[in-house]
Image (tube, rainbow, N blue to C red):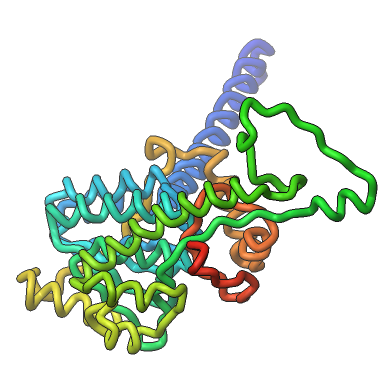
Length: 329
């Protein structure tokens, strides 16, 4: 039986359309799968959201006023199925304003449900500031914490530029505008200005420790020389409440806050943009992952100047502790 040429053409066209739709469907499934992975715990599974649970939120890396993390903490306070929150902290600190913002979000959350900070390896400087917002602080006995202090830093390459014959000119609306910078020796009045800002931020940190740990200001000042201490030492100094693993945090929630025993612990992560897949966010995640895996994120922070006042501990020990000038680490 010979088919009409028009029928043959129509059938071929139909096959091409069906093939295109199959490819589109497969790509759609791939995008949906990646979006689900990228969103991480953004939705945590609709079925899981309905069940009572303890939420675990990881706070790691360089501390910054991360809007998505702040939104997550606020969202947890409004989620009825979440009966308590564990903040798992693994950070050497970061921007003082980041520690302040997340501390305040933690206090808002704590007004609605119990919050325990669990320092798994390091929770120093701005990360310790965040832990202060919790109702209870638990740390492993060999974890590092404290490092109560702040600093501001910048490179000075003015002598190098003079040696190679390079000069920068600028027009400023006022003598201290835009200072300090890397190409101009820092005038004494600029150092005085910065020291006043450092001291004000330092005092804010001291007040938090005194208030949240129920210590006198004299006691806090004796500890606020930039030192890091282990979990065991921190317990003796009253900077934390308990030494142990995450199970210690759960046991406290059960005994002191009457959280139902054996509740599942679910990991919650900040949402991506509006909860949808984003190539930009995926690219950012991949880049951060590569830097973290290779250790280059720490190297870059060591070499690049950081704007703003920092509450960060530097394990390389390449910064001087100058508490008399309000600069500590």
